[in-house]
Amino acid sequence: MILRGTIPSAVLGMDTGITVITPGTYHLEEVREGADRPYKTAYLLHGLYGNHGSWADNTMLPVYANDYHVIFIMPEAPAAFIQI
Image (cartoon, rainbow, N blue to C red):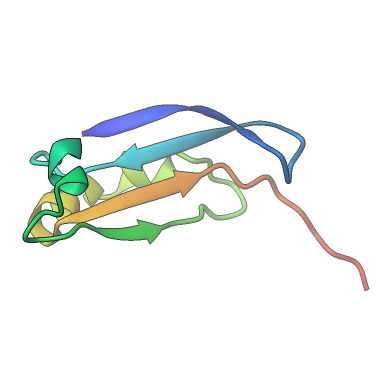
């Protein structure tokens, strides 16, 4: 399942986009009851010209989520450059 939306970010001081991909078998009740097979979680950041949906739109993450029992979380990360 692919979920897309926005969440408030205190660090960025604004709402930011997020995409979450869960296995097709994901059920919140399993997590609450201590499922026999826990879900792994991976956070993925996009590149300079991407956005929070880039991984979901251009890869096979939904298939990997099902095959490997992983929840993928991809927040929007605006370009930020640090000058020293």
